[in-house]
Length: 116
Image 1 (cartoon, helix red, strand yellow):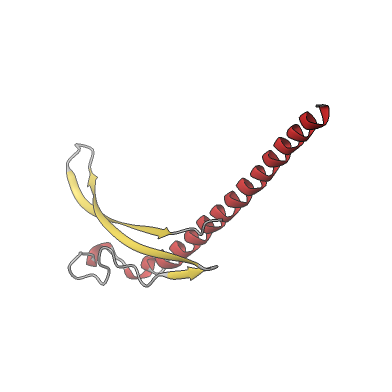
Image 2 (cartoon, rainbow, N blue to C red; image 1 turned 90 degrees about the vertical axis):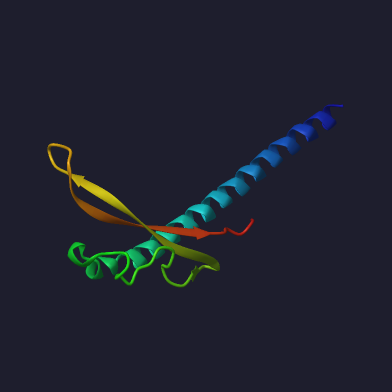
């Protein structure tokens, strides 16, 4: 009877340790994918600093269109799909009156992680 109880305790301990290992591995791969997506985003946003200017910016005449951010990028076998969104940010003076509108560009990157 003691042997059966000790085998059960040992098996529960081994299962717990293996679950901990699997969880740590999933966490590692998820964070690696997040880091890669931030690098892809940086590479897509960085060129905009030179080409987007407030005095010439409008949605109709600009080369950037909502939703289009270039072709999907593959890193380490994971496909990252970028998409731009735009919105206006009002600039207010001390009397809370809108004096100008700034345009904000947001880049959203989506990906599907493989099941481990």
